[in-house]
Image (cartoon, rainbow, N blue to C red; front, side):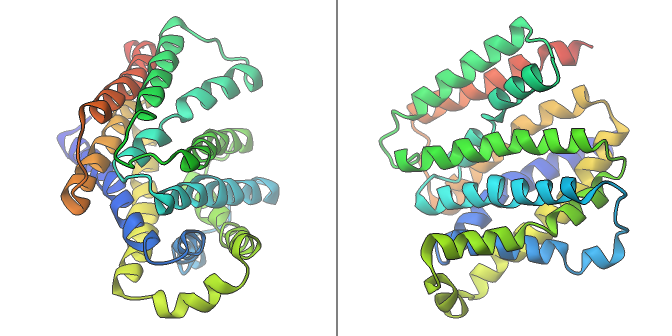
Amino acid sequence: MTVKDICITLLLMCLWGLNFSAIKLGASQTDPILLTAFRFLFAVFPAIFFVKRPPEPVRYLLAYGLVFGLGVWGMMVWSINIGVSVGMAPLLMNMSLISSLVLGYFVFKESLSVNKIIGVVLSLAGVLVSLALSDGSLPLQALPLIMIAAISWSLLALIVKKSETKYVFAFSVWGMLFAPIPLIAFAYILKGGQPFFDLPGQLNAQVWFSILFQAYPTTLLGYWLWNRLTLKYPLSTMAPFSLLTPIFGLLGGVLFYSEEISLIKLLAFVLILSGLAVSQLRTVKQ
């Protein structure tokens, strides 16, 4: 990689890590599901008017929007609203490693190498250690939401792979068109009309910053840069950079919310990130 692209990638990982701090800023003041719906609404408009619709069948775009919007970020933002710390959230999102291997094994008949199995064991050990946290970083009632988000992240990759799209950015933009409505419907089913009545009085400057930060630099700019770089360089070159996102997320939690880094939390980070790194060893060697 060129020095310029390395710097861009590092800044992107920083952006994605700090995004969890921006999420908490908004989720602590308004309904988390509606906050996520606004994120995708602004990410889609007006960008969709300047991006040609990809030729893939609508069912793939619909599935992408539903899983990316409600499955990944709806559940993740909800978990942060419940109390998951901005340091732990991006770390636990990487538990998608486990569901990705399961999907790869059963759907695409991919082999499970020794390093991948070791990676899963290390990551699971990290999750078990994180359950011992007593500082409120991981409320038990939020764990199912985190797991749904992680599994949905794996399903997202499956949808893109099944679609065989060659227009990744356009596919993402048009897929996100189908994210806001399921999120709004879910918010109504979950809590009725009250969040909608409360929303106008909650849209202060901080909430708007949270929405727009998630929509434009994080989603549109971030995914455009990532897709451009993944097309330019091998996956084995790009994948290790994703390990930096939880680290920047943790630093954001310390900087903006004075979150403490206990020995238990540090051990959980080391185990899970080690599991992710070990699972990539064979790919990196190639």
